[in-house]
Length: 156
Image 1 (cartoon, rainbow, N blue to C red):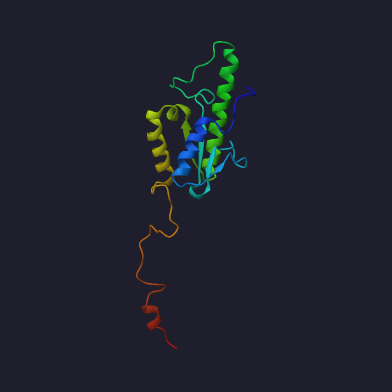
Image 2 (cartoon, rainbow, N blue to C red; image 1 turned 45 degrees about the horizontal axis):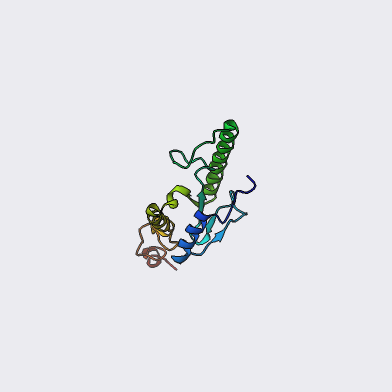
């Protein structure tokens, strides 16, 4: 397992190149955030995890299959990875980050890649996720501060 890469994997590089080509700027493997997200987009308060289907237990995926030998070890290891991913995601959401998870199988084949990358981009920069500090949901009153009648009724 020492030879297994933890960063700059092929799926990561595909996603990073695509986001960069679309004009997004990001940080990579930020160790200050829990789980060390693969991509951190501070401007959009979004983190992206690009997970391998085997290592992170992608249920229903053809790439997720337990090895035939030492099954108990692998079942426990992958279950712990899933639990750690869940805990990191919950914490990041609690502190205000939007968490997006991209699976290796979604970008492995060219047929699914374009659709997945485009939906990822839209999820990051989509207008429904942006919050405008100047927008107000309350109805704007035509009066600036106080009602006018209070100024005319004063007695000196």
